[in-house]
Image 1 (cartoon, rainbow, N blue to C red):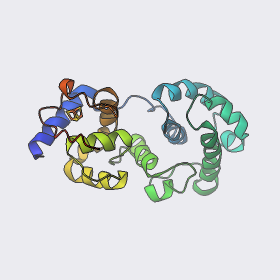
Image 2: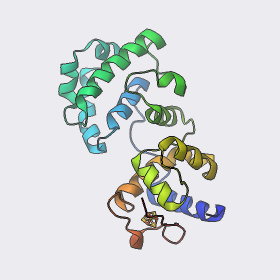
Image 3: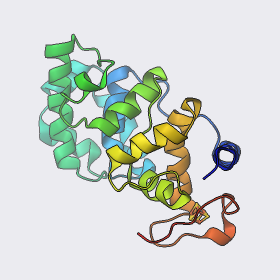
Image 4: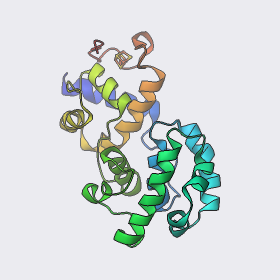
Length: 209
Ligand code: SF4
């Protein structure tokens, strides 16, 4: 893969999917973290439907830390893994109050000490909240990056490293949502629709899983 081909594909992704993600900009820091936590293994629509009711009921972090898990569950029932997420949300809010004075920390090592927050959510949070550059690799990013030829590894952490080497830093934060959108719409898990893909002329099309 040449540098020129990569640049060409990145600028097409910018044109097609934009350079800023819609969404959680008006949230408080802890709300943003919980929204990212809720998004794992759920659709954007499910999360968008649940959030207004959730934030109306729990306007302060203390309220969530003290809430009963069953009550939190009732607000997020439409979301994947809602039971464990309700448990983690309560615990995470308690940890934020006890260990970080109610503020979400700004480093990955601190963030991953929180219940329900893994490396991927931590990186996404830092990118969305503070614009701190990071490459976040989920199942779509992993698959599409490997097919394109930007990565060869099979694990998210190793693919993250490869992407940080080949993708210019200014694209890191937006690469995540661009490849997720592309992975849902065109380069899907079930089938790569190369014939209608804007990246087709440059993509290596490594389709063997
Ligand atoms: S050309 Fe095919 S393999 Fe490459 S990104 Fe597009 S759909 Fe995926």
